[in-house]
Length: 223
Image 1 (tube, rainbow, N blue to C red):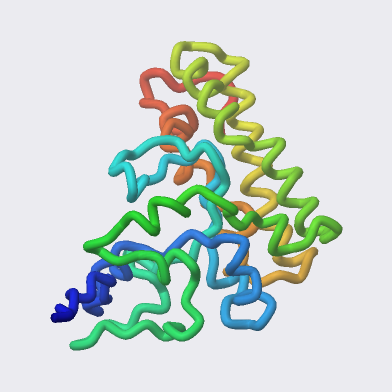
Image 2: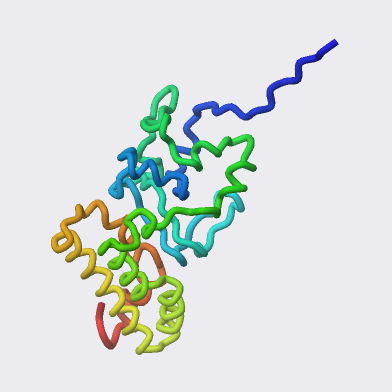
């Protein structure tokens, strides 16, 4: 006699837990969502290489080894901007949701783990290698790379005045680009989180300690 086996395929319970915990990082296979207008650069933010992030698969926090472009959260919260709270926890783009959302099931994380760091989408992929904005992003990254700045901050906090001045210069360049690019490149300010990631003092907490030392130790160039 044939005995039907239970269906072991994971089924989303629509509890909204993953959506409330933040938006997904995007993969190369998500590029059509941008080309088709489901997502726009103003919906995105960039977590830069070296920025401290939570690894949801490993359950650890540390500097990201790669650039991550992800759907930005609701202002002041962690929830994905496309999550609509309610009894059924609806997603506003569910039919066209990104690859990580399709792979993630709370009770069966292996599919997400298998793709977590593979074929990630970058700013250059989205903007196109010939885009002037891609060139601006590359220049900003070269001048304010977080891995290099983290080392400079370590040296500065140990008393190296030259390292502190280098951090100050990087912070000034970062701020200047955020001020000038919306006007001169005619891009909305909401796009800055995608183009340049978070301001340095937010992306790299050590920068705050260097740029705003206790009054007793202030001296030399000011931020």
